[in-house]
Length: 239
Image (cartoon, rainbow, N blue to C red):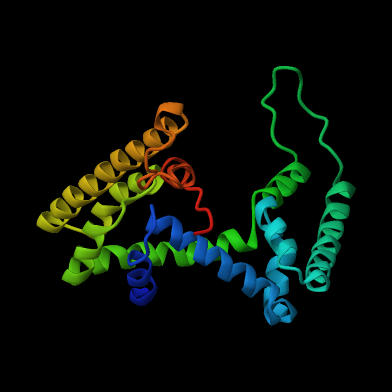
């Protein structure tokens, strides 16, 4: 079965004036996933069953709250908590194993394994992950099959450190021979040149605080700090 390709959204993202189009992909997917979760879908049995079992990470719980559908979120959390109570009561009845001495191998208790699994699962993270992987596959597909996309790729403002490494590592899975070599060359150049550009803009931002540069133009450095945060840590602020 062929994986679905998302050529239109990937093309659109690479046309954005952004310090990392891969970060922009994830942000779009996150916003869509939050809207989906808090839309009519939360009343559907299969969606509610999934959210009851996995819950949400702290970040996405906060984003759901900020979406301002308080009744919808209360309903989602209520049935999730009911599911937690049912499972924890069963695990508590099984009790704790007391076998083993000081030097015996300590195994995680079933109750801890359950709570740890819930604390490390998130309905929205899992939904984003599935589509994000297809977006990345589409990026490589477009590079190999669409010359206009190659131009967009080479003219982009580069990538954050994390996504540069991710693209570099994933490339051999999707590309071969000359295409892989060309992609690696373009990726290396686009990343490093734009990382250097960003550092120079940030450096001028710092220099502007010197009284001797008070009357000098900001050039392109007025918003250098949030854009440098994107380059270093993938923090994509509002543009």
